[in-house]
Length: 322
Image (cartoon, rainbow, N blue to C red; front, side, top):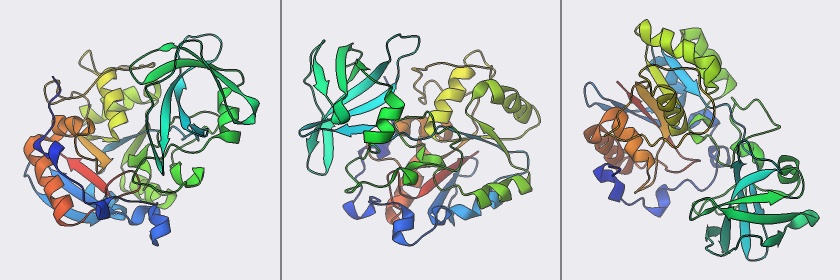
């Protein structure tokens, strides 16, 4: 059973859900707030994200997700389709997709659909449902190339806290380097980084490694051997690193992972985490507790609520250090 901290049952007041990017609120990307928790002392402190270079040490390693964000949502009259990812090693352009029911300004999972069903999409395309992969995900086939189609007809996946569509540029990070591909979800933990902030980090001696682990595995091992700290940027990076470290040391890896990081599984490759502030009952909280322990995660989230930090993908940030 996956264990999550007591904070899983907290409530986020509506006023603390970020409803638009910080730029729309008159702040630069790196002007969001940064809440820091230190495992060794239990200390919680408050900063701006642009203070990050001074919070890290020379020789620390930030592992970043370089995926671009696709406009992966396609809307019809009553339902929408969220394109997730290509099915590996599958012919005929199979993708994992989720059907969503349109409900006002947001969407909910749609339980309908049947194998072989055709769904006409905007622009004259047709999506064919092949079979269910999970309760919510279908394997499906689009009759045209998916990524170019999404760039013409898709919009970014938007959740309930954000009432209006934002341009796709609002969902890209400074690390996104391949516009021909990408993922459905924004690597939100990396959103506040700017080119200037990255320059300041590098000038301080902080190292960066892409989530492309066949290139970054040796660097992770080197940093740990030299006493540096490996700080994952986002829980996706945590899962990838811990999958690559299943043998006890980080090895060059590629492919899918179904690894769930929990306090019971612990962590082998990660010393700290830079992430956003997650909502109640989020499975991401288990990864935070695996890295920092329940007590510190509880303290950080109490401080976030007391000091009115903003939650969700366009909100403030949170750094867990050893």
